[in-house]
Length: 445
Image 1 (cartoon, rainbow, N blue to C red):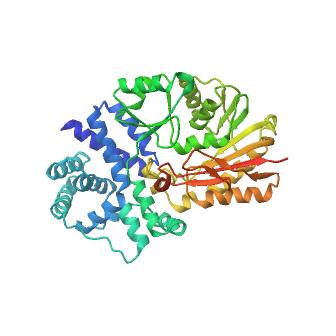
Image 2 (image 1 turned 30 degrees about the vertical axis):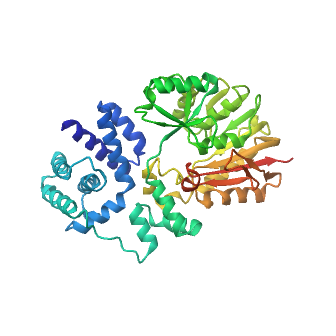
Image 3 (image 1 turned 90 degrees about the vertical axis):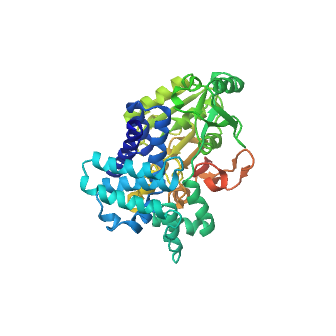
């Protein structure tokens, strides 16, 4: 039982780190699992618990509140997290017996020196277990609140999505955010053929399926720790969602071009563009954080890419030596990340106020980036969010003050095809990609 309890402790620590330290759950989980030495089964349990609780936190709190004598917001955080852990196993995990979930939760609360809360934890979880076939219904008088609780998304985001999509598609979007996502990878032509990649994956007992509409991409299943697969270590593929790959395609890079990527870390889009260029040309990859430059360099080395020059740089600050010199400039700007909630469930914990200043930063980076584009060159703006305030509103404002730039038609593989408007918002429930915005602009003079 110790290993399972260790997996549960890692899940609890992940919840605490997300709440107190603003740590990203995916990064924290991966690091904690590696340090713990858990076997594959228990690592999967820790991951399932950590992600699952974050994906369903408001719904779990609704049920806990229905059977708890105290209001959930008044419970000590560790007590509430242990209740969420137990309730998630009871309501969402068939392989864990209810009695084991209750007993483990009681042991955990004692492990964290909260003996006085053991009785409460035991009573609440036993009531949830006995009533799980007859749980209280979420009130539906207010559709915003109903969807917020059912799918554990903040009210402000649900309200804004309904304004964009309507209630029915908003529900599809929220439901999609709570589903698991297979790993998508891009074949690296610099490290052998696709046939060799598939053979290598098969030898590692990894299941690979061709992406339904994006050539050279595959979805992987049964990967375990991806970094331990020989094909990964040998650089035969790049882990990258289809939406990010489309960004590289939208750039339209060719051999010999000079490209600038202003917010590059950890380097995925620079890598994808380098592959499109057959590693011939120059890609100057900048990032604000010096600590992340090494990530770009290590990734390029693993993938056999030599045309990337990584350096620290603030996307808002002009570098005169690059003025009007680049064929393509990419601004994959810092954003709210609301298009990748299904991969980073703790993004939903952010408040509207926390994100309100992002358009100013995005506009500053885009305006600075324009100075690097040579006449006839391309300026590409992208985000991994679905909010118009960070997307169309930013590019509309930019174009209104820069008459030398205009949007230009995007061309993608079918079923997307041509996008005459020059901008597109991808949605997981529509396109089975991350939520993503891409806008292509050309400097006319």
